[in-house]
Length: 471
Image 1 (cartoon, rainbow, N blue to C red):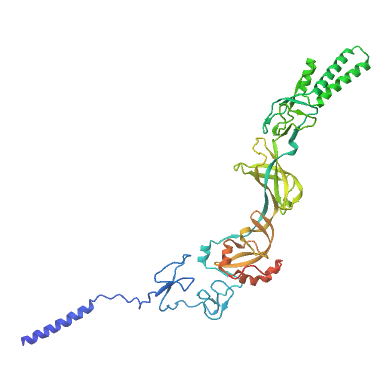
Image 2 (spheres, rainbow, N blue to C red):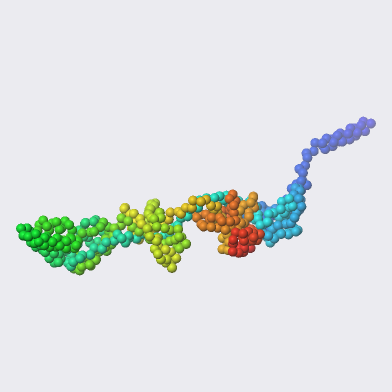
């Protein structure tokens, strides 16, 4: 009896321990597959499905590889309305009534009834917009300014060149200025001259003056004749460019001087010096060529399309290559009447002061003619916003986040960095000023432009065709 009771007690104890063991069992971690966290089979290139990777990676543009699962989870969010059609993922004009993939394996994007896509617009994802570095600017009216730029070189002012030539025959007995490029002052002796003709002229003057003195007590007619002969002899020496100081010396001393100096007529620089000490010269022979460089010319080559904006007395700013930190100012003095057919340019002469002597003949520089201002404000678009196909000009207008609309525009005159807009845009439009050509490359601009053929006719373009090829 006692053994039977013991068996019953052991049985009861085992059942109790099993019960409490089940209650205290640690809960197991739920299965990841049951929770919907399916592990990807592999990862594929976002733009080329033929390139895959067993681990997460990025492509050459920084985009994450797309994970591929055994069974893609169904989208939980309901579709916003009825699907009208499927459009090309890169913005091409191709559409499809059923789901399909493009030539690169990307799914066509659905267009819903609640959000139809505007005709002729280009769609770019925000990620691509950021990667391309797209920037925009709001159009507004502005006062257009235009500057004309040209290249030129410093030249000697032809009106300030003086030739030193004697008016009588003689010899150079002494040469004071004996180097080309030497600076001379007005009235400075250039050389000493010996001339028999000069000696004869001095003696004739002295004889005439002695006769005038001898006839002081004579008749008025005799005194007048003697005075006239004396004045003529002195005037002859003056016409031969004998310095007044030398003539005064001749009058005081009363005897001829063997040699007389030839003086510089101007302040300047010796450009030519054929004179040599001891040489014989004839009347009219060039001994020195001296240029006054206190003012110089700059001869600029202005292109024919800009010459209409140049006029005399127009202010000019000049940058000389030899002095990059200095700015020289002058004015247009003369516009040459002929055009160089080889370069299609017209010479414009600019006068520049050169008191410090920095502007040396032969130096090159760039010329900026003062801007021609139009006081009326006009709608203008930046140069960088215009895509010129040759047949017409197009500007991309931002219509929303990631949406751009090409507009054919008619442009007027060009100013510094801007084009005048005659038709095709309105004030307040945001136009793409940077990466517009990259947007063109990311999309099919030609297809988007096909919807604007009528607009191209409205703005007076010659043809609705564009030279942008299919992307």
